[in-house]
Structure formats: C-alpha cells, structure tokens
Length: 478
Image (cartoon, rainbow, N blue to C red; front, side, top):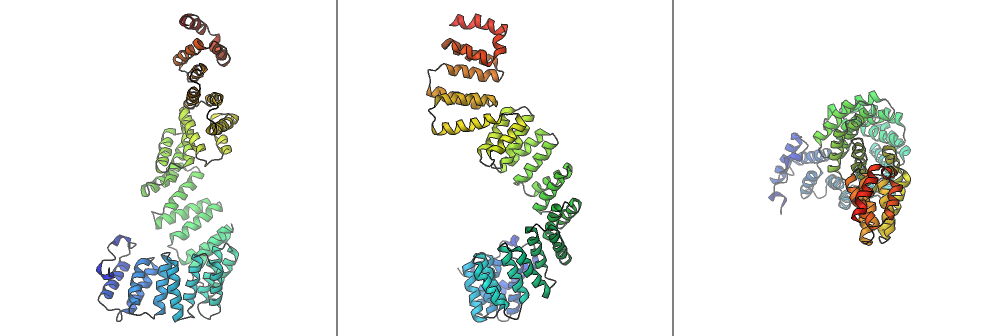
C-alpha cells in the first residue's frame, strides 16, 4: 500500500498534547502528498528535526523516507533517517543509513558520533570508542564528540573518565545542560552525593522547569539526609508535573520514614488515583495503617496489593502480621507460608519474621521444611507424616496437620492411631466435642492411645470430668 493511500496520523492523542508539532507534521504530510518537496524542502527538514527533538521518531522516519525519494544523495537526510531508525531500535537499518550518509560526507562529525551511538546500542563498545577517537581528530564539533565519549564511558561504568569528557564538552560550551545532568548521574554512581548535588544545581540553573532535574536533586538530598530540602524538591517536581508517579512514591516514602503518616497517605493515595494498578503504593498504604495499629485497613490494602501482584511477597508478610494481631492465627501462618513457598525470602529471613511475630521455635520451622522435602521425594514414609502433623500442631497450623494425618491414613487405612492424632488436633483447636469423638474411636481401637493422651494433655486427663467420661462412655461402648 502506498504511503498516501492511508492517513498515517489518525491517532492524534499520541502527539504529546503539542498541537503546533502535530500541525507541522500534518502540513508536511500534505506538502509531500502534493509533490511540493523541492519548493518546501527547508520546511520539511525543519519538521523532521522537530520530530526527532520531540521523540516522534516514527513520523520523522516516514517523512525522511519520502523526502529521500526526491533527494537520494542528501547526506543530512540519510543521517536523520539513521537517527530515527536507531531510536526505534532498528539498529542494523540505522547503521546502513548512517554509513550511506558518511559515504556522501565522510568528515561529518555528527554522522560519526551517531554511528558510534549505534555501536553502543549494539554493545560494540571498542568500535564505538574507535569511531569517536577518529571524530575527535577532526576540527569541528569537538563538544559533541566529548559528550558522546562521556556517554560511552558512562555506559561502561567508567564514571570518572565520563565526568572528565563531560567537562571537556563544557569547556567549549558551558551552556550544555545535558552534560551537567549526565555528570550528576555519574557522581551518584560514585556515591559522591555532594558532587551530584552541585552539578544538578548547575543543570537547574539552565533548565529550571525540568521535573527530572528536580527529581534527581530530591533523591540526592534524601541520600544526604537533607530531608526538608528533599521534600521541597519533590514538591517542585509535582508542581511541574502532578502525574510524576515516582515523585509521588518517593515523597510518600520520605514522609513515611519521618513518621509523617498523614502526608505519606496523601502521596500514596494520589499515586493510585493516577495508576490504580501500582502494587507498591497499596503495600505502602498497608504499612502505614499497620503502624497506626489500624489492622483492618492495613489488611484491606495488603489484599489490594496482592490482587494487583500475587508475587508481591512482602505483602504476604504484612498481611500475615495483621491477621496475627486480629487473632486469625491460621490465616496469618498461611500467609507466612506463602511468602516462604515463593522462594523470594530466604528460610532464615522467614524464620526471623515468624519467631519475632509469633514466638514460633525456629527448630520447628526447619524440621517442617526438612520433612516436607523428604516426603516430596518419598511420600510412602508413613511415620514421617505423623511427625509432620505434630510439628504443624506446634505452630498452630491445624489444617496442615489434618492434611498430614490424612496422608498417613491413605497409606495405613487400618491404623487406629490416626484417630488419636485427629483428636489431638481438635483438642488443640478447643473443639473438645470433636476431640472427644475421635478419642473415643482411638481408645476403642487401641488402649495405648490413653497413655499418649495422658502425656499430651495431662490436665485434661487428670480432671474429674474426663474420668467420668472415660468411665461412663468409652468402656460401655467398647
């Protein structure tokens, strides 16, 4: 299908809300369609540059490709095409376009530096460095080459060398704000936060309305523990762009760390009004309500977090803690086991949390894991199922205990001791009527169950009520 057989700009919403740029692109499209490329070449080239500057690379590529049909030997157009292709991650096509540009103008520094950037995208770093060193020998545009060398070394983790190259670029062009911004990131990587703060301030002197500069400055100030200044910078970010999700999140986290829970809640709730599927924000709100001892609300937000992301393992820990505080012990332990089963947490970390919150003996947890691992490979070891049931009882995981006893019974259907273990579970759950029913079955089938019961529940065994029950019920039926 010919380019002009369809309307390429039908989705107008994607044009960054910039009506001027959209209008220019539409005009350029109509000029090409009308065959006025030669008369309007300057306007068309300016429009392509606007596309590149405003990250409208697909539109820039379409316009450039059409214009090259009229001017196939224009090195600048081939370069623009290569830039658009590179930004669209079509690196091999981009390389061919830039090499075509260099075949027409071999000493074009911009084309050489863009070729180096394509090599960087392809992770061909030695080739990129060779091309930039070659470009540096030319007399023009050294500032651009130094900047690209800085970028290359930054990508390679050579942050000190990168800073040196950025400073070389600034020596000839001190108004190059991008150099200051990239230097700030290098200083951050070197953990020189004072250095980062200085160059971010230099950047903001040149670009005072850039929210990304204020955001990076806020993050550095937080690392320097200058919290009030960090808050001010985050608030400036949000004044410039109230949909900056990371700023809402990090400002909320900063307020939370300073126990300003009301302000933190405002931030995280503002975030989820913009992005309703941000699991991290729901989790943070849950944390705040937990700290405020409002466990029901905390549960609500931990659960919302897990609806968005079932693999958000910290939320299982937080929700488990809330269940514990609300005396839903089995739900609490189930959540902790989900966190452990996820393999996200180390066993040691899980044990630390569970012993701190629940008073569970870490030896029980380790024993449970060992027995579970053993039974997964050798499920026929029937006696291990009963030992596992006992361990589950110690940590009040009653459903798991009953499940282990059922596995034992499947292997040993005629073994009456299973009745005793079931009664033990129900007595532990304070469901004494069920406990007595299963104990009756155990005693009817195996008198030794009475000795086991006496050891496990001595106070009940010694009570007059139990003695009466034994005398009047079990032996009469047996």
